[in-house]
Image (cartoon, rainbow, N blue to C red; front, side, top):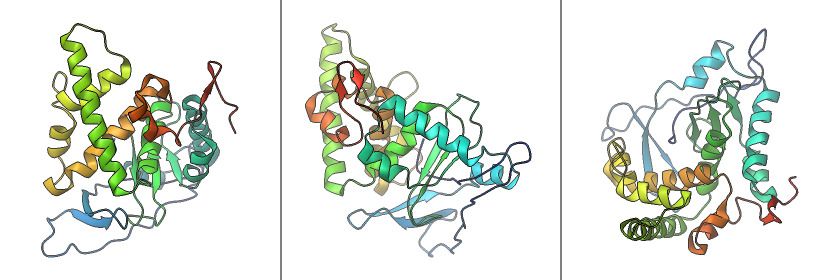
Length: 256
């Protein structure tokens, strides 16, 4: 899911106590800012970005004591990291982000990554369930945000090429790999999904569509493949090289 809403909790469930709730910073929108939107910067090389701020689902759940304990939340995160083969280097940074899991027993997915300077300086991750793919998706947003702007733009260009090459294969009747199916869907759409750019354009102000489309493609491919980057062409896999560990002899390199 996208870059909005979130909270980190420690304790919860039966008799649990909430350990960490974001100190929401409230600011009056600038006169030129549409009502209901908040501004923050995504990085020194990124344009100012605007996103809607609903009442965060996990924030409400934490206030009512309905979040997983800190140990449960960490367990969900670590299981996702193991399943996807997140690299030790990436894990060091991603573990520094506060995380909350609302219902670790559910596998329905859903969640948010909240960028820095919105609620907390370091940003944080909110997961609505214990689904590993959902966790990898949100943490991939956080990792992709570390890329300089020029690298995010080059990734988007590479994904356009990847989608185009997948379309050429489809027209020739050649079966597509999972990665190719995702790239094709992001560029050309599938069923009621119009494609990544038209989809993002329906809920993000036009100047910020490229930023969001880049993010959603990166996170979508990360969770769609769960670390299986050997199915990607080298010119796409290079963007995931530091996020995932190498595959050795059919198994992940030892996880730490």
